[in-house]
Length: 196
Image 1 (tube, helix red, strand yellow):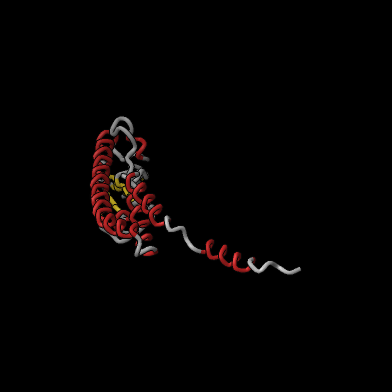
Image 2 (cartoon, helix red, strand yellow):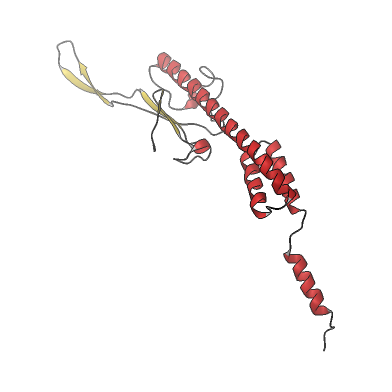
């Protein structure tokens, strides 16, 4: 059976049409990036605009993405600074509540939830909505005790008198920079360490 002569060119034309992209795609991607930006998803919007610029450099959408990219970078930087400020404020509230708890009960609580509602209105969390990592501990589990005659004996100390409070950043992984940077507080003092 012989095929019609027009079948091969029609098939090639169909394959070429399927292989090429819709010329409206850069504009649609740009509109999606603008929507992400309006929804507060600045990092995702910036990544999508960078992709438009690299894949469709000559399109009008790429030109708009370049212009908006500078504004987005500034917004991202301001957002990161604001979140760092909020993180430090949340840590200060938590450490103040921990100190008030210790003043009342003589030791730190077993969990941050024990602070609610007497010392703080809700369990402290990071600006990204993640809980803090909190670990109370006993610095000296065995302590010396002197009796009236001057004899020294030892006893177990079970009072939690130290703690670590940590935020692992937006990615919840140790290490990182900018929004993924880690913050460690030991007994109310910030520590700058590369790793915990």
